[in-house]
Amino acid sequence: MADLMGLEIDAKYNAAQEYVHAVFKGLARPEDIVSAYHSLQELADQHHCNKLLVDGTGLELDYDSAALMAVMHSLKRLFSKFRIARVVKLSQYKQDLIEGIATSAGHHLKNFAHEKEAIDWLLERE
Image 1 (cartoon, helix red, strand yellow):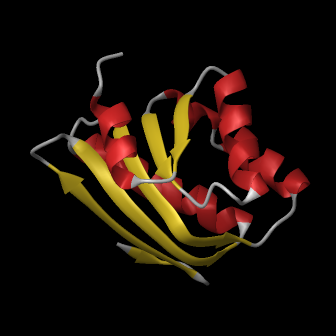
Image 2 (tube, rainbow, N blue to C red):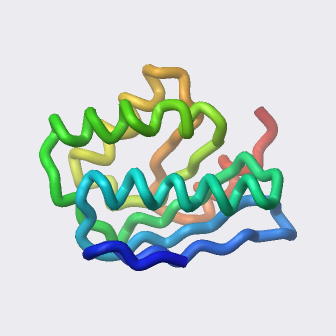
Image 3 (tube, rainbow, N blue to C red):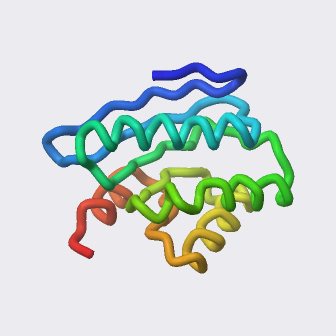
């Protein structure tokens, strides 16, 4: 799909289960993450889809918590449109922070260690 500075993104629409599946790899700056999610929104909108499965296990965030807050703020409108399951390295403290900020803002975003759990949650009825 896209290859930003240090971030590689591979995204596809899963027609059978009606969600966008994206794999993020590499070193990402704040602007890379914002651009990546906007690309996912475009793909999802093409398919009238509101579910995103994001595999960030190969991703490293190259910014501090203050920049993370700015990223979350700039993505809040986008996040409000989607149910987002994120497969991440749960040992990275920023992942908990991302989920906490999103949840407290009322977004349907949840972190998982395994893709199967993420898909099950993504596809369950709200």
